Every structure is written in C-alpha cells, then in structure tokens.
Amino acid sequence: MPVIDQNGQAVWRRRTTGQSMVRWFGWLLGVAVFLWCWNYISEATTWFFVWDAPRIADDIFGRATPPRWSYIDKLWGPIWDTLNIATLGTIFALFMAIPVAFLAARNTTPSALFIRPIALLIIVGTRSINSLIWALLLIAIIGPGVFAGVVAISIRSIGFCAKLLYEAIEEINVIQVEAITATGASRWQVMAYGIMPQIMPALAGIAVFRWDINIRESTVLGLVGAGGIGLQLSSSLNTLAWPQVSLILLVILLAVVISEWVSAKVRGAII
Amino acid sequence: MTADMTTELGILVGNKWKKPPFVKRAWLRWLLIIGAGLYFIAAIYSIDVNWSRVYQGLDRGGAFVAAFFSPDFTSRWTDIKEGMTESIIMTVASSVVGILISIPIGLGAARNISPMPVYMICRGIIAVSRSLQEIIVAILLVAIFGFGPLAGFLTLSFATIGFLSKLLAEEIETINKGQAEAVRATGARWTQWINYGIQPQIMPRLIGLSMYRIDINFRESAILGLVGAGGIGATLNTAFDRYEYDTAAAILLIIIVIVMGLEYLSGIIRARVQ
Image 1 (cartoon, each protein chain N blue to C red):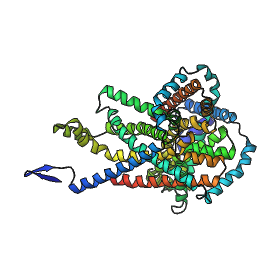
Image 2: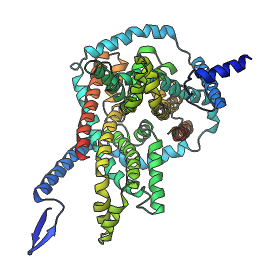
Image 3: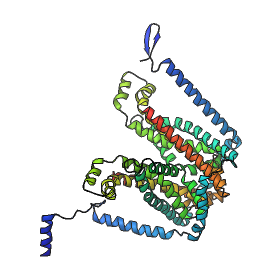
Image 4: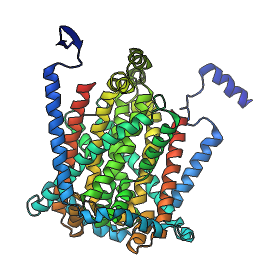
C-alpha cells in the first residue's frame, strides 16, 4: 500500500508517485489532443453564424409551430412504407443471419480455419457501414424506392443479428446436443432439435430488438431517397415548409417511442 | 372400435413424438401465423419493384463489387484524407465532451444515489437524447449553426449523452451497497463517497462503454456529411453521385478497417480493466 511520510506520520495514498506521474502525463496528452481537435473544429466554423444561432433557432421554432396537422393525410402511405421497410428488412436479415451465425460460431462452424474468418468478415463488414450508406449505394445500383430501403436495412442488420446469434450459439448447453447426437441424428437433425430450441428465445429477442432499431433507421432512409417517411421530411426541408417538418418529426418521435415500447413488452414476454 | 384400437395400440407402443410448438396456446398460434401471413402479403404487394431497373442495375452492382478488389485510393486522396481527418477529429472531440457530460447525468439518473427531482430531470434529458436520431439532430443543428464539423461535433456529443448516461445509471443502480456504505461510515464527504465508494465499482464498465461509444461515434460521423455536418460522408456521397465506385470502395474499406481496429483495441482494453 503506497504511503507518504508526513512529519514522521505515515499517510495513506491511493497511488505511488510513479503511478501518479504516469497518469498525470496521460491526462496531459489527452487534453492536448482534445485541444488540437477543438482548434481544428473552431477553425472550420464560421463563428458569426454560431453567435447568431439563438436568433435563428428562435426563428425556426416560430416558423415550425404550430405543426400543420392536416398534412397527416399525406403521411399514412409513407408511414406504412416505413413499417414495411423495417419489418421486411428484419425478416430478410434474419434469414441471411442464421446461416452466417452457424458458420461463425466456434462449435458449429464447418471449418474454423477457412469459413469462420469469412463469416466474421461478413459480420464486421455489414455492421460497420451505416444503413444510410448502404441505401446510397443501393440507390445507385437498383434505383430509388422502398425496395432499396428494404435491402439496405436487411444488409445492415445481418452483421448485428449474426453477431448476437453466434454468441448465443457458442453459449449453448452441450449435453443436449450430445443427447440428440446419441440417438443417431444427422448433422441437420442435431441443428434442428439440439441447437435451434436452445437459441430460439435469443433469436426472438434479437429479432424484436433489431426491429426496434430498424424502425428508427427506416424513418430517415428517405433522406437519401430510399422510401418511407424520410422522403416527405426531405422534401419538406428542401421547400422550407417548417410546419410540415415539425409534424413529421412528431410522427417519427411517436413511432420510435411506440416501437421501443412494443419491443420491450415482447422481450419481457419471451425472456 | 377403431378409436379403441388406436388408443390401445397407443398405450402399448406409445404415440409418435411431435415437436412441441413455440407458442403453446393454439388460438394465439394460429392468430399469429395468419396475421403474419396477411401482413406479409400486404407488405410485399405494396412495394412496387421495378424489376427491369433492378436488372439493369445488376451490372453496376457487379462493377461495385469488382471495385472492392481494386479500390482507388490515389485519385481523390486529398479529399479522402481531409474528410477522414475531420471524421476522426469529430469523433475524438465529441466522445470526450459527451463522456464528460454524461458522467454527472448518469449519476443523477441512478435512483439509488440521487433525489427524486434530479432523477426526473436527468431521465428526461436521457429520454430526449435517445429518441432523436443523430441524422435528424444533425439536420436541425446544421440549420441553426451552419455547415461544418461544429454541427457534427454537437450532434455526436448529444447522442453520446443519451447512450452513455442511461447505461451508466443502470450500472450504478446495481452496485454493491456494502462498499458504498462502508466508505460513508468513515465520515466521507459526498464527493469522496462517489470517488471511493462508487467510482471503483463502475469504472471497468464505464471504460468498456466509452470504447463502444467511440466506435459508434466514428461510424455515425461517416454519415453526418450527407446533411452537411462535416466528415467523410460528403466525399462518399459525391463519389456515389459520380458513379466513382472505386473511390467509394476505398472510403468504405478505410471505414471498415478503422472500425475493426477500434473493436480490436476496445477488446484489449476491456480485457485489461476487468
């Protein structure tokens, strides 16, 4: 225990002098890096606009309230599209994520040396690119519309679902698998009766969890042209129709709150 | 007669085993199946896919996949470098500020250490921050503060607060009370109580969550450029608009490599602190 001698009395210290110095230099370095970053941001900013910001914010708020409630009539279609993008995207993603997860889990992969790294690469690759970027890419390839949104959401969700699922597969109870194997079951039967029932609750939980996230993401996909309520948001923003923007933002907020509530209820019922 | 035969036979040799259904109540099971089927038909029907357009696009899709094997880092290197630097700077600055702000809010949002009014205010801040998506916040902040990395920095800091404070508060709510009480029994002040009774218990989790949030902030910083809030997104968008797939592939590869690096780093750091 580090102590320091003070007028002949030993006083308790949390760290030795060396440890304190190392920490102190670490903090100094961190602060220096942060200040350098801040300096960069500050140089790239037109400060006049920032000082003017309260007035602008007040102005925008004044224009945006009250929301144009009658515009809701035109929003039902986009809301339905948004729901479809999230739901179908999640379903397709699960169909693709289950095989990837089985290939990525250490205990079920056919080859830990060759196939597992490929599966892990699919997981990292799809996960690290945001759904908006996938949507941009898919719009360039298959044209704007709801379909591009569905595909973007499903590609983006593969990595997320497969990662959580393969972790669940690695944690299964081996005894049950051995029992099924001992009955003379084939590889596929072992999967269907030994592994699937064990990961089913995890799978359902992951599906609902991802669906919740996908509702959030699909509300903004329209900003790049991939369908859903974001399209209306983007066109309202471009025409500076602030009362419509505020209504759309309220609808999005409501959708997010409802989907989170549904997801929490369903997960509570499963687990 | 036959019914008797089957039951008798059933008793003698046993019934054929059937897989138990996932949902036990029959009416609920059928309702779910039929409902899901109807929804699925309606949903598929309402998406009109222009298959000829998709078919035409397959060439471009092929070109994009091919571009991943021959990414072009050189011809737009200055733009890529500038955008990437800006993204990284936004990530670092917003993570630092976001984490610093979310620690007091996290403390305030933990029911076991904060009084009711503070708890309500902090939970309110968390709820607002969590329910607004980054990109929407970015649009509003760009409208208010003008184009540039400042809007992106503020967006990411704001989003970090909601994420980190919530998980931190949940962690504080599950701490071991004994240790905190022992520190308090020595006559510690409130700050000492937090610093010696609670902070050591939540530190590993805080570091892990912070690393995870840095990872998320970097990924998000890549798209904020789409709405003018700085970072690599603007360059990426331009590359897609001009059908320069090799440049786009180069940018995406850099993003993937950095994210993988961050995940690896956070794995090492989390293993060390736990």
